[in-house]
Image (cartoon, rainbow, N blue to C red; front, side):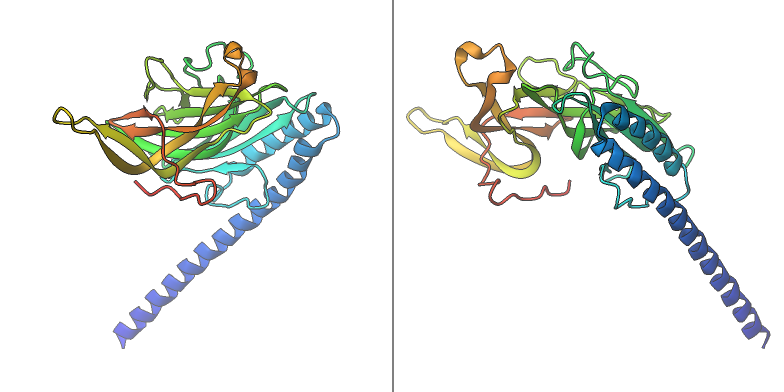
Length: 313
């Protein structure tokens, strides 16, 4: 009888614990749902405000409210589905980034914004970090190491996780509208300090003799450039072993960053990025021995008509 009594008590304690957890989770969702509704109203003005003053005023309030919302319990796992900014999260869940842009006076010129939640293992908690776009003032934008307050602003679409010597690199694919003549796309590399502060740019590119911290493509706004992460094929030519024999093709499939090869529409215009357009050929970067290594002339297997998702690993 005593055994049954103890068993029933334990079941009641367990049920009470589960009920308490569920109640706490529901309270978190309710609180964050309220924040989400307010954020959506503000974000609509950020995107559609009738004047630059209205947009930036709404943006300042939006940033403040977003930081406040992300400090609430459960914010990292809350989906914020109704909020139409980019919500970028890598497969290892180290960070979550909310990313958007504000139109300036010209509809072609944008300023980029981001607020991140970054996990600190020592604290077993998240911190929030806001990024400051200095892309207009960054002179050597391919060779400069940046920080949260010195960021080559972009609107990101992908975060790729790679590792080398126990260091994790997050490669971000993004777009920077620049101006009415030239578009930019960027391959950015982000790492983290132990205190959770992001570092932008790293020497992980094998790209001919260029010393890159990030890769920025500049091209005509009249064109559209492909920049994506995909599982595709590249070809290596194996030299003939004997004289008179033909070299052999070796086809390898792998995850890679694929992009259009840009060329000037006329050779005499090669000094001006507004005349660079896709050439119809594709190159790629493959993660090899801790570096993004250039590989030319990728076979894309009609990827535009039948794209394939990257494989894990």
